[in-house]
Image 1 (cartoon, helix red, strand yellow):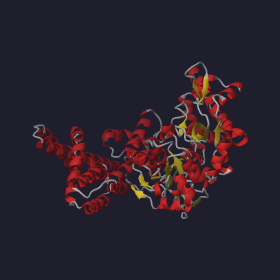
Image 2 (tube, one colour):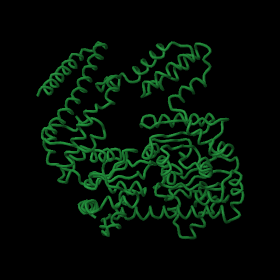
Image 3 (cartoon, helix red, strand yellow):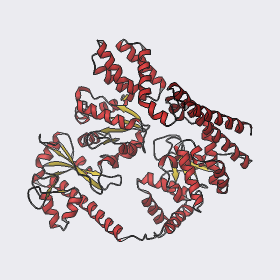
Image 4 (cartoon, one colour):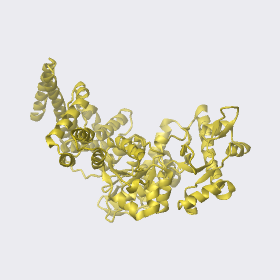
Length: 601
């Protein structure tokens, strides 16, 4: 279908759908005032904080801060992508799906992907049958039984076994008409190095199917049952498998992660399998020791708290530190489980049970405390050299801390533990920040203090920006006036900037600002904030005055930020003996004068 036909189809679904009826199939709702209320389906609660506004067609939970339109709800509750949610809604409303016109290349690509998905599905069944129904899997089955893995868990995860043969799968699949090219592209086979032909990639390994969020088999992980190397082997990258984007067990764990409010991340397949076997369900594996930003972002769609339970050996600790480096900048609450006796989660759960492991989860160590503890435990600080080493290790962690109270408490702890004055540690932190950020921030017209200041948005500005978004949504004819007074760059905060930019772009393209196809281009956080804004009760009598007041508040805040940047850069350049400080000083005074004019206008 053409873009216009697609947009019209989506808009028809949105305008004709009854969001109350759709959500009521999943959540009992009760009307209170203009909105309907119920207990949120995305987290556990006793008092209803889940609100639906039928007039605007949006829902928002004031408990877990998730929201969106009818499409977002179906996507979240059914765990499907947007186009699949549109299909669900279309079937519900008996609206026929328009057909998209595809190029020959698109058709060929779709056919190839379908063959790869099909090959993976058949491979899962092949490996599972080899484990459960043939003599090939006898040793692997006995190994799993010794690890306490029941037949039910084997069936739930469709665990399998790759026979100890060069081409058992290749031969079987070739006989079934699966092309050589598909076997290679799916990662199930590899080229022979010494002669023509292809070989099975997985041999003599327990096989764990790896699924995407829709439950489709995207690849496999293989574990040896002896001491051969490598211990684990994953599918190589394919058109449907990229381990940076996949978490083992996430397809079945996401609802438990949302309910519990935390995700437990482990290294290996057996850690997840054993935990599930013992009833710990909010757990996923990062396919080895590599944890990526893409994986973190997926988890953060369901929870802000990520608990790492990597192995307690040296390699596991290194993996934990790498993972913490990845997650630190994404805004998640990070905690670490220290497993006693150097055990991995799998061994610990088998020996001590689920209750003991859940206690470790509940008592997990916050990130900064873990980093401080590792520095103190791993260094002999009985002499001056050791004290210097400890300070060198803790300074980067303390400098990255976002909570001043927490940082101050740990500075005092380190000071007392190693016998160094607090002021010396603070001085090292200051030098670290200065050395690591100075050049970059001066070039951008910022200083360390300015970077810290820019992270916080004044509540009055947030309120003004929310009012602007709400007013545009209700009447987009005010957009030309707002565009003439306010630039996108003056909007503070990525969420608000993205929402307002989307509204402007929709209007400039001749669409309604609240056109659903435009709203669906927002990222999840922006969509949630938009839902929140639309469900806030806004009282206003004089709209023109309210618009002008909001614009003034936003502009003054932006100018104040610019003033601070130029003033602080002038100070920095003057200390460096750079005559350009005069230009910066003059610019800061010009901005200050502009702020004064706005205050008295």
